[in-house]
Length: 378
Image 1 (tube, rainbow, N blue to C red):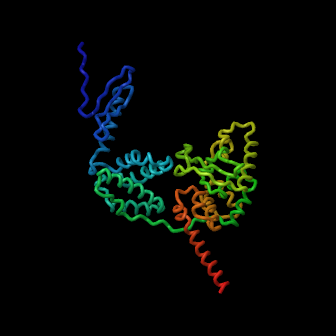
Image 2 (image 1 turned 30 degrees about the horizontal axis):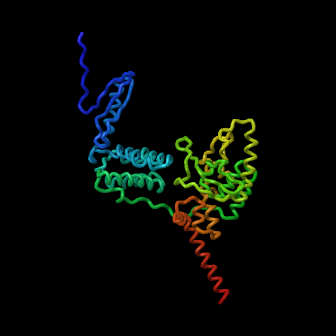
Image 3 (image 1 turned 120 degrees about the horizontal axis):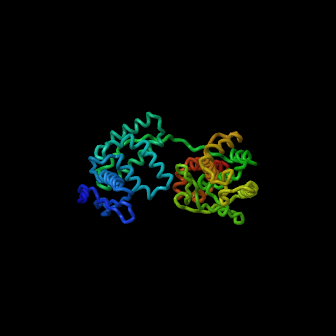
């Protein structure tokens, strides 16, 4: 019986062949942008053909002209190809969530060519009426504006229409911090707490929450009185990420005697608890009850609020302890460059911008001191 000739695949649909190991391989037509012929694999010809069809649809969406390329197709491509290599895992997840939950449902049905300032403005107004905070709307705007700026570079659109839209202003408010008196009350309330050392180190070194929970015993130099800030821990969609500190800037900060004493007590307590237990991470300074890495989010959401309540102090976040550390130093007239180095900021300009309300207060106090001095001499 004559063998039925195999049907040829349509032109431009790619090729499918069977390998010696039994797997099927499909190759797409050459990509006009990259010059490559990507391959897909499967256990049957039908499986590979389906994969090829999906990849071709993705390519067509990517190469579609602006009058046919939908924003919902463009944004994920931009995020994956342009931003992902430059973003930390947590920032990438935040961008991805914002695109999936807001930008795609609200504007994704529009093509790049038909996206107008009026459409974007209506979208922001709807989000505002739905009760979203100005900071959230500004993040949506930041992502959309950056994505469309890339579209301009790629000659997909002639101008960035997101730059022609008004965004809600952030409310002006100074960050609440602890001055010397309240800080002492907090430390007094923390005495004997299983996490006492965590609060003391946070308040006396200004480490970020992720840097605190990522601190290892090897990073604590009791002899020299130093902490080496070499990594941070944070969770992205329940997955623990261990990474370098923000901006990749490792640093060494002085270890105050108060913090060193609290850490010594914590070390003894931890060694006692670990006896007879399978301790997950003996290298970490701060852990959960079974030695697993501590969740930085719980610091602000559960433990710190309970401690503040015991101390009779207003509610604040773990990050505000960092602000308190910096504010106390600046009020003691410490140099901004020194405070910037301790905080791990990229430059003193950032420190000045964040804490200018403190520095304004110090400027007023300086003039008052000058006035008093001149009055005494006149």
